[in-house]
Image (cartoon, rainbow, N blue to C red; front, side, top):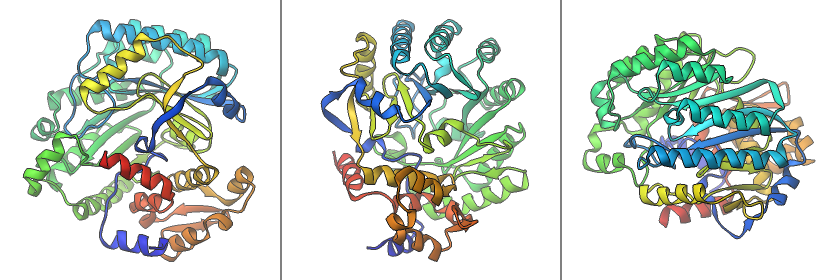
Length: 450
């Protein structure tokens, strides 16, 4: 099937793939024949004077019914303490190789980073300051959180450390939907969390999910309306994804009538777009709506898409250095995840074996990554592509670009930059998949079978 037929068929069927936010996904990773050596990635990083830092905190109090993130709910204070100590060591050691680069962004993801104590955050920020002293004037420092995992003292502490962006998963403001999502706290707790964040931080992102078990359109827009009342700078609105190894997959198999169909989700998406525009939000991607002026709502994502190396620290973190994309082993099962986390905490930094799993991208896949991520953010420049790859964009992707133009999924602004149209944003995950190489498709399919 050629690209035009693929796009037409997928759109006609109202297919809604998993939201594409990276290429390739971890499903394409495999064990390296030999562990990756630090000198391999240092060579790749030499092309950039900048760096992004991602720190993975793989601890949660509970696993939401739709979650396939790398985390464990089986932890003690001692587990977290030893993990943080090892993270601080890794930060210091990586600083020996990359500490001369200007840090564009620092992102604490999870899991739930706000399960850490003030003392543990102080230890990590001190390590970052010592190892990576050069910061961009607009360095974005983000912490992910959940409403029931912080108090005002911790937030004040984080702000003092320089945190200028907080992201919190709200998902829903309806008690029954919270319960079905596996979130054992009250709506009042969510309200208090949103109030505390928006009162303290210049940039707050709130995540909500539509399509949860038992949710109706009325209840979804009730939740979204409650979140909008707090006037956070950014909202990320995700259709629920039903993946293997999740409770929600079992629930949907037994009662599909309690869930939105893909066609329903697309209709809700259209209503979301109209509502967010009426509230003064600008759409940046399929999920992201923001009021941030003069910049992107999520600088780490944008900088990564533009080619800045990403240093991932901690079990489950991913790093992107040119052709090398890598991380630790990955698991959803709690026992396997705990084993990987414990192994990370037990072993010192080894420059001759910094990663056991990942993928070495071909020049073709590096080009595909550049194109599909640029389109995801609606900013694919022909001049920039030629500067990076030494070839014309249309020479490499003529068929795909003609198909997108034929279906009016992109516009060509000023003869240089491809930008998604309204329909292009709506079907952006389908658009992204149209650029996947056969190799990556096969690797991801093999992972699903396994």
